[in-house]
Amino acid sequence: MRLFTTVAGLRCYLKSVQKKQPVATDSAESTIGFVPTMGALHTGHLSLIERARQENQIVVVSIFVNPLQFGVNEDFGRYPRTLERDRALCEQAGVDVIFAPTVAEMATVPPIQTRVQPPAEMMSGLCGVVRPGHFEGVATIVTKFFNLVQPDRAYFGQKDAQQLAILQQVVRDLNLPVTIVPCPIVREPSGLALSSRNQYLSDEERIKASALYRGLSQAEKLFRSGERVSATLVQAVKQELEKVPSLQPEYIELVDPMTLKSLDTVTDEGLLALAARLGSTRLIDNTILRDRRPIIAIDGPAGAGKSTVARSVAKQLGLFYLDTGAMYRALTWFVLEAGVDLRDEPAVAELAHQCEIDFQTDTAIPVVLVNGQDVTQAIRTPEVTAHVSTIAAQAAVREALVKQQQSYGRRGGIVVDGRDIGTHVFPDAEVKIYLTASIQERARRRQLDLKSMGQPAANLADLEQAIFERDRKDSTRTISPLRKASDAIEIQSDAMSVADVLNTIVSLYQEKTASLSLDSLEI
Ligand code: AMP
Image 1 (cartoon, rainbow, N blue to C red):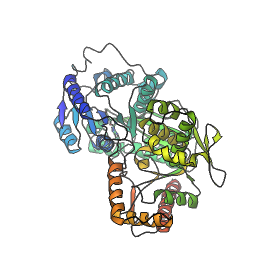
Image 2: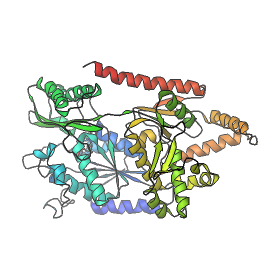
Image 3: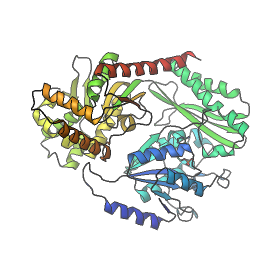
Image 4: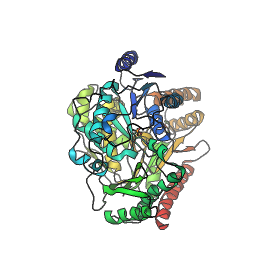
C-alpha cells in the first residue's frame, strides 16, 4: 500500500498504474474505486472500502478533515485524527493508495477561490438549516478529489443521505465521469449508526443514542403496516425519542431521497431523516421507506441453472421474470435495424440511450417492446443471437441497460438472474441467492443438455476445461464480473434437482416476506 500526502505523488502514481493497463472491451482494464473519508475509520468506512475492493482493480481512500465543511462553531479542531491506525486498517482491507493531503496541499487555507454550488433547495433543508455552507464545502472538496483521483466509481454511505443526494445531483449536473455507489448504513448491535463522532459519546450516552434507531424502526414498522402519512410516521419517531429527554431532536423529516423535497405522504419511496443533539454531540441517522414488492436476485457461474430456476421461481410466486438477456437482444436488434456497425462503441452507446425497452406482462408470454414496437419474435432470430455477445460486452451498453433494469426494479416484484445482480444492479434486493454447482456437475449437466438437443457427444474433460475457463473469465472481467454478495445465500446444487432449488428459494422468499409482516405486527 502507498500513502501520498501531495498531489504530485498521487498524480505520478496514478499515471504509472494507468499506463500499464490495456484498454480493451471487457478485458482486464483497470478501474479505480474511490472512498473519500475524513479518517478515524470505523466499520462503516470499511464496508465502503470492501465494496470498492470487490468492484475495482485499484482502491484509493482519501483521508482529509475538510475545513470547508465545518462551521465556525463546529468541531473541526477536535475532530479525531488517527492516521496511523487508519493506515493499518486500510492496509488490512487491501487498499492500494491512501491520499492524505495537508490542508495547505488542498489549498483550503487560504480558502480556495472557486466553489461548487449545489442547488440551494437541496442544501437549505435537513442538516443545511444549522450547517450553512457545509454542503458547498463537501461538494467543492469532493469535486476536487474526483479531478485528482479520476475514479470510475466513488463510494458514499447512505448514512449521510443528504450529502449523497447532493453529490449525485452534482455528478449529474456537471456530467462528472464517475459512478456514485451508495452503500448501506452500518450499525452497532444496539442499532446506533457508526460514526467517527460516536467517539465523543460516553458509554451512557451511547446507550441513549440508540433511541434514534428505535425511533426510525418504529416508523418503518408503521410504514410496513400501511401508514403513508408523513406527519404520522414522523410522530412515531418523535414519541420514541421523547423517552430519552437528553436527546434533543433538531429535525425529523420525510423527504424524497433524490430531490430532498418534503413529502406529505410517501407514495413510492421516502427518506426519513433526523438529527439530534446529545450533550455536545450532534448525531444523524435515517432510513429509506420503500413501498415495493420484494426483488429476488439470483447470481452464479455459467451453467448453474440460474435462468431455468429464476423463471420457475417467478412463475411459482407470481412475480415477473426480468429477462435481462431479452434486453440485450432487444438492443442488438435495434442496433442491427439502425444499420450501425456493432463494434462502433460510441455509435452503439448513442443507440443504447435511445432504445427504451419495456415488457408487457399481461400476456402468457411477455411481450418485449422497443420504443413501443413489439419485437418479441424479432429478437429471437439467428442474426440477433449471433451478435448479442458483441453488444453485451460493451461498457456503455451495460451501463445503459443496468439503468433500465433498475428503473424497472423500482416497482419490485421481480426475479432477475445474472452475475452481478445482487452486488451491482440490485444491491438492496430482499432475497439474494448465489446459485452454484461444481465444475464437474456443470459439465455433466451440459453434456446431458447437448445430448438432449441431438448435438454431437462432447467429452466431459473438454467441457470441464471450458467451464473452468469461463469461470475464470467471468470472475475477472471488468464489466459485470461474477461476484457473490456478502449477504447472498449460497445454494450448492450438485445434489439438488431443479425442483429442490426452486423449493429452497421459494421458502427463503416466504420466510423473508413473513418476517417483514411479522415486524409490522409487533408495533
Ligand atoms: P466521513 O469520514 O464521516 O466523512 O465518512 C466517509 C464516508 O463514510 C461517507 O460516505 C459516509 O457516509 C460513510 N459512512 C460513515 N459512517 C457510515 C456508516 N455507519 N455506514 C456506512 N457508511 C458510513
